[in-house]
Amino acid sequence: MDFNVMDILFDCAVILLATKLLGLLSRRLGLPQVVGMIIAGLLIGPAIIGQFHPGGFMGIIHPTDAEMDVLQSFSQIGVVFILFSSGLETDFRELKRSGAASSAIAVMGVLVPVALGTAGALLFMGWPGKAASHGMLMNALFVGSILAATSVGITVETLRELGKLNTRVGTTILSAAIIDDVLGIITLSVITGMNGGGSVGITLLKAAGFFVFTIGAGLLLRWLFKVLVKKYPHRRRTGIFALVMCFMYAFCAEEFFDIAAITGAYMAGLMLSGLDDTSYVDERIYDFYSHVFCLHRHQRGFQPFQAVRACFCRCVRTARSCGKDYRLRRNCQAVSL
Image 1 (spheres, rainbow, N blue to C red):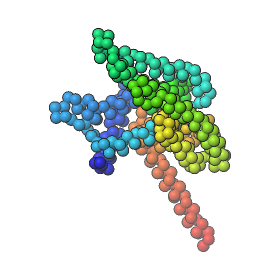
Image 2 (image 1 turned 180 degrees about the vertical axis):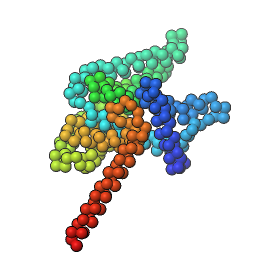
Image 3 (image 1 turned 45 degrees about the vertical axis):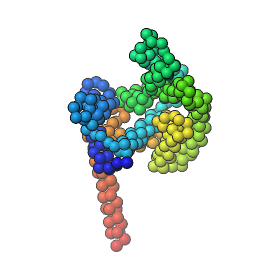
Image 4 (image 1 turned 90 degrees about the horizontal axis):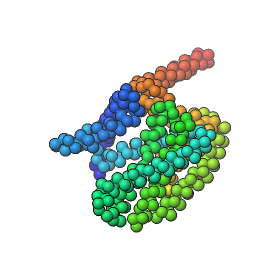
């Protein structure tokens, strides 16, 4: 497959520039930056402009299949980081209080879109003037199940940007989005089974197995994390342990249970939430990806040079510490002489 590293670098530069500029414009209009980022993705690709360009405009960026796989991998890892960080910030007490409300919202968030989407698709295909065949009904149900999907990543970033992620409302919305994601998979599996493919029982068994695995392995890893934090508080090794847990949960969720990797990452963060070094790990992880997009926790104003300033300050601190070490060595040499 055709693959060029230079094209990847150009695509990343265009994506970062477009998303940040449109995100800033969206913020000025009183909307979350995520809205501008979505619009940027539509504008730099062929989705909108390509429909009106007589020569078949392919977009500002037009990666090959191999290059698109790389970009999608970058985005997947980024969303995994975001959901893991959100899990670390989640308050267990708020989660318990909002359990019933989250479940009700998630169920309605699946039933209503499926019902309305199915009815709309049937009307579009000529029903009730034309009798609905089995194939027509299956197609309509598939359309309805597609509309039940929820973007957990966009939900998290919007709530975080508004400073509502740790509130009761934010916890309820995020929990409902996670449950909705699992229910959406089950719904799609049921519809596929009705069409003669797939197995509903296996899907339900995998969903139940995922939560059993999450709780069972999570309790053990949570205990190991406590031991590690007690022996090595505020050390990088605790953050590395947390990241390993995040990636393994994301991998197992997608590979073995057919659950979205971001759901596994969120559950990993949830298993480590509320511990002594949780805030330390969360800050390290958030700093890692927030400096790329100049995003800052609980900050409503946009500061485009914050990441550059942070990097500069780190360089200054490093230079100062190196200077102190150099002066200390010179003093020791002078004393020894």
